Length: 161
Image (cartoon, rainbow, N blue to C red; front, side):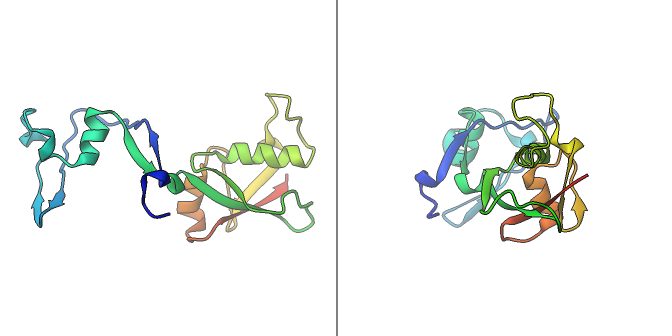
């Protein structure tokens, strides 16, 4: 937490965008607000005229992302009658797919062999969040945004099919 460099990690940005992209860049510096449409840029602007994050992202092809925004904490909660497999909070990248969590649950329940790369936990296990059944392709970020909608840690309920 304090917003310092130790709380950030360098990642390569990937932005699949159509070309050309109209953009407006706003920066508040010294009380002045500047904005421009992409069509107003000539390509001869100095780096000083752009926000530092734009220079890092576009010119240097990198961006800083707060570490805590890359992780998602969650609890695995057994449905009634199910065996408990985890006592504490788990943490994973926000991009982790529900498929991986389903595999983890199925392995802990002894339903699939973790050494078999073709084993799919979603054949044996169902995950839900706030009574919404999750699809294997849902990421933790998607689940948090669309199904959990709370600031506290996610609770994912598991059951066998």
